[in-house]
View (cartoon, rainbow, N blue to C red):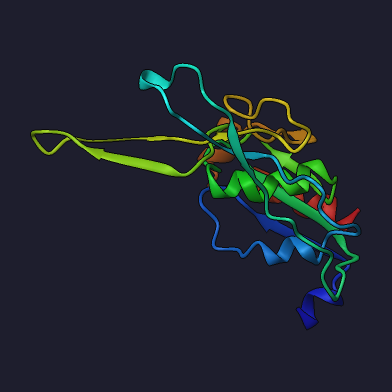
Length: 173
């Protein structure tokens, strides 16, 4: 954190499943998180999920942390960002804490319920309903970048990371 506080720009790569703690978000927040109902666990009392009785609502309820990172913040995302990466990025998107570049995240979030079938087959699904912090649909939509990027055939052939190159360009502006 002492090094990050001194930075002019910081680039975070959230492609895939990140190994970054949610407390990093607190160092970007300038106000208390008020969105407490974006994770919803259905209260099921009837078979086949008919007549859902309601939802137990959850959120992370984060507060601004010290020190505040005042740098130009850039997050790189793509379709490989799923689940926890989307929970993390939902704060960045909702509170407009950074420039988000790349492609939309997977749009698939919620705790995993695994189930073992005869023959050793395993399936899983989420038993949660996860929405955006404003209550709108997240499933199938994901976190949208503010700057949409595509890989090019030329970039792939040359072994370049065009998303990272764009992030560095923005960081140096």
